[in-house]
Image (cartoon, rainbow, N blue to C red; front, side, top):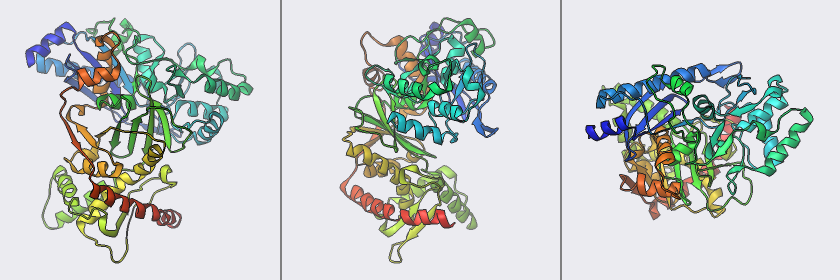
Amino acid sequence: MIEPAATAIREGRTALGIELGSTRIKAVLIDEAHHPIASGSFAWENQLKNGYWTYDLSEAERGLQASYRALKEDVLSKYGESLASVGAIGISGMMHGYLPFDAAGKQLAAFRTWRNTNAERAAKALSEKLNFNIPIRWSVSHLYQAMLDTEAHVTDVGFLTTLAGYVHWRLTGERVLGVGEASGMFPIDSETNDYDETMLSAFDRLAKPYGFGWTLRDILPKVLVAGQPAGRLTREGAILLDPSGSLKDGIPMAPPEGDAGTGMIATDSVAVRTGNVSAGTSIFAMLVLERPLSRMYPEIDMVTTPAGRPVAMAHCNNCTSDWDAWVRVLKETAALFGANPATPELYDKLYQKSLEGAADCAGVLTYNYLSGEPVTGLSEGRPMVVRRPEAQFTLANFLRASLYSTLASLRVGMEILYREGAKLDRLMGHGGLFKTEYVGQKYMADAMGIPVSVMATAGEGGPHGMAILAAYRIWKREGESLDAYLEQRVFAGADISTVSPDEAGMAGFSVFLKAYLSGLAAEKAAVESI
């Protein structure tokens, strides 16, 4: 398979996706079959500076160059080819945040990432004024909070964007965003695939007393849907990405997207009645809706697919971190007896042992809240294990309860969507909860009451999803929708494992969840007392 890939690389029949994630910047090159054929990455971390979680944009530039250079080295090592061009490029990054510039392109404030929580007052006020849930991490929340705090730089804002939008701008000169990424800046009207005009006007009325010389539309990036032209790589952009000068300019660029959108692409979850769930340190599910929700829910974020369809996101702060802590304790326990199991093997054994537990965990409850959980009304967290005296406190029941607790808060959020009549035919899982074969899928299927699938080809995650969007930009046929492109040309024949819920499992989780919700009073008391 080396020669066909080498020929595709020589002839530029490839697509490149680069994603600036929270801990690494990764580049993935795919062939015409949409398979990853080379990759490169760069590790970076956010920093707390002057009260804000941030990344220096010079570090983003360095990481872009390093990840692309590592990709070039991977191509040369595997195929003996010097990478000089690709068919298309797409840039993705962490959604939300705040990156303001003046009209001349001068950065006005340090990049404020999605992790910052200082915009709570602004988010609450905007949600009330717009009658739409505006989360704290959204760009418009950061902007309005800067206004409320009378930060001097706001007067000079000429352009507001996200990390992906900034990098795309540097590479092309175009101030644009993909609609999915734009939906994390400001609400989108899925009928027009543009910012909601009524809400734009409402924001401008809030801003009028400040006397700024701009309207919100003036400073937001232009919205594009997947497949639309988003400019071309300029000579300056080519040098920025590849300082060696070997990368050719003029390469078509896809609309820049956010990591939520690329996750949807990588899991083939952009069609109506599909969804994906990411389960790791935090857990969130994204459902592509047949119609918008009937009203605002503080627990549900509304965004869109890269094609503009409405998506409901149920997001929970806590998932596997408490489980990971227990695994470390059990590893220490094994060491007392001279055993030193490899960590992956230990996880697998403990996951599999949990299957021996009772379907309802036989009265054992655990709470995995290391931090607050807005979905269940907790401002802080206190991990707890609770049981009645008659509960069957066995290792298997404890392990099963610990894994159930990673899903309980998400089920609360999903209940809102179920009551709204949201329908799902398929839920694609990805993240650490699903690394052990079958177990995490089974518990998720039983907890959510729907089949859960895991796709082997989604291993590269967001950068792979962005590369696919770049491929769609140049290889789509006339009138070919994004979901049809994915179903028929990208993931047809993909290696997918699916686990369906069973009656006993669903009934057992329901019993556990009822007890879990009743016991939240104890969790809240622990927050107040400990």
